Image 1 (cartoon, one colour):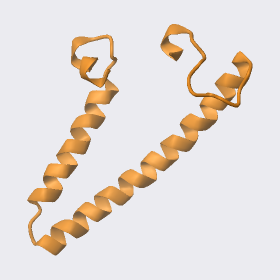
Image 2 (cartoon, helix red, strand yellow):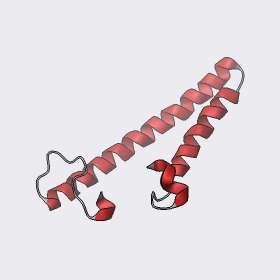
Image 3 (cartoon, one colour):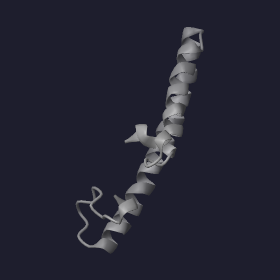
Length: 86
């Protein structure tokens, strides 16, 4: 939405365009923090799983799946390679 100059991006408490952008910034920072914490926890848990199973293959598969999607969603949705993210 922001790419097209629209400001209706799940900012329910905001009324005005300027408020929407401030709200968006707040949410982006908060969700980036949560994502970073969760990602760190995931890698810790995958290491624990590999140790428990005495086999790293399941953890490697899960990790590769996550990294694949991280890379995929970095791409713009208006190019063929990023189309999957739509």
